[in-house]
Image 1 (cartoon, rainbow, N blue to C red):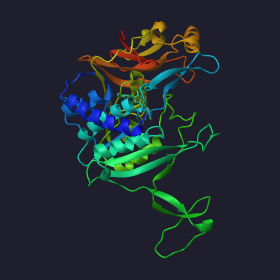
Image 2: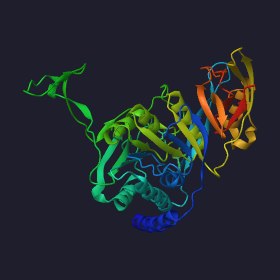
Image 3: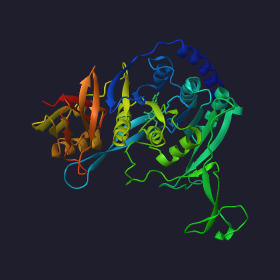
Image 4: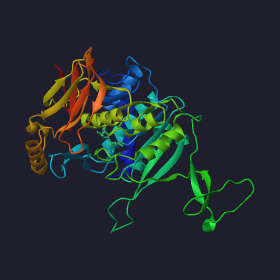
Length: 434
Ligand SMILES: C[S@@+](CC[C@H](N)C(=O)[O-])C[C@H]1O[C@@H](n2cnc3c(N)ncnc32)[C@H](O)[C@@H]1O
């Protein structure tokens, strides 16, 4: 294939499909859950084109993010696997792999570029006029997408080509080990927000210079000054044992995304990630005092993000695009002890569903069946208590299984009428407490 032809065709298709997209209809959205207080923060289970349309035309429109971070599939040709830990109640949990999302494009780079280009065009139009976008990719497609960004945003709007350098397992036997990703940063207009970040620059010989007017610092390595950050960012991948780790495939480090947000998102502004995965951008926004409106087409991803954000204390709504395949409904059993004041302690005793419909085969299915026969709540990811009003589950408290995963205890308040449990496969079920 001729890559120039691929690019030229992709550009043509983007223009045509963007026109079709603009004149299309909205799929419609429903609010499924509200975590804690009413707020403007949103996590949506949706195809991003539909969600972007909802942001521009829906009941809350216009929602115009000042900062967008996207980390789309990289065109690796592989399925990306999430690691699920299934507690058996004894010893180490069983770890099974489950497809998180597909990164295969059987018909080559052309269709991949058309898809991503259409989304970039839609994002450009929903962004705030002074907005900035950061597109995270690697060697597979970044050089093609750089040209698409020049086409869609204009080459003069390029702000940075950031290199995220990391260490991870694996080495290069036929070339240098590939240990960096590239983040393309573009602004919508000339006048955009930027707050420089500082990094340490060690003095030659690690000795103090003692220049007049230059502030110097010392750490265990020696003397350094603080300078504006280069375009190379050294941040470790999320370590396997870190509490930050969600198990979602290709999760990016909070520290990296926080740094982007600090640089390009004014405090209090709206930030979006339209390929949200485990919700790293949303958590970074929460920590930095910004709002978030994010989406992912995978219900499991949205559930991972919702658990993560609820645990971090965020208030937000979970929206679901109408017509998105259902996540399934586990059958819940639980014991309750109701106190005189109406509060209750609900202990989950079962969270099960027909596993034959989960698309699992071989070892994965075997592990799940084994875990479930040892521990009937092995599938439960997290639970909440709250009320159901206007069809929306409004959570007032969130609970996770004990570290060994054998117990999920939900302590409700007298106002709560329901508990809800989310399983590890994107399914959920609410049940009345009484
Ligand atoms: C690389 S992952 C994002 C990981 C994320 N940055 C994190 O830190 O967890 C890419 C995500 O894009 C989602 N995705 C792919 N196509 C999409 C689409 N058309 N609309 C919304 N999400 C999509 C996948 O489900 C996957 O979760």
